[in-house]
Length: 174
Image 1 (tube, rainbow, N blue to C red):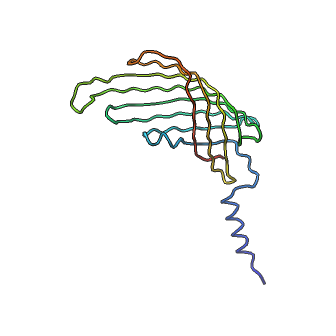
Image 2 (cartoon, rainbow, N blue to C red):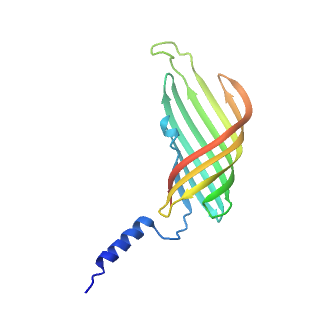
Image 3 (tube, rainbow, N blue to C red):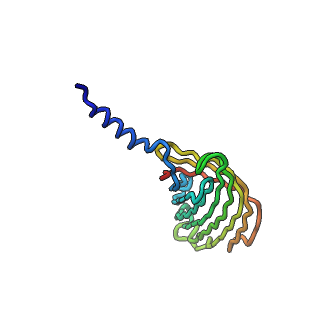
């Protein structure tokens, strides 16, 4: 008699690793790896309230101490319309973002405090991109666009200009 145990265990393991064949993933949790170099953690959560529509929120914070201690933070809202598939593939969207930061301290250790500054940046723009998901849930998003940036800084005054938008995120979809 042939035992079905190895086949059953192999099938169960394959289903566990691969996930359901046609799972409808409605939430993505992602990090932007480029900001980790600063070091800054920039995390995004995207949900699909209806087919072909994704709404995401991003928050980030980091402290950079190169020569002058700095702190950076951001909050971002985004909406995406997925063109061909629900919650993956090619998409077009809008983005609203706020970036803030402070810097200050001695330029040289023990020197005078000469570089105190705060900055606020507001961005509103449009973008397009691609979201790739594996059957198991690994997710990658790349986006590029253009936005209107309004920057206010205690060291540089105020300026408004067009600025490129770019996002690269890796994570998991549930």
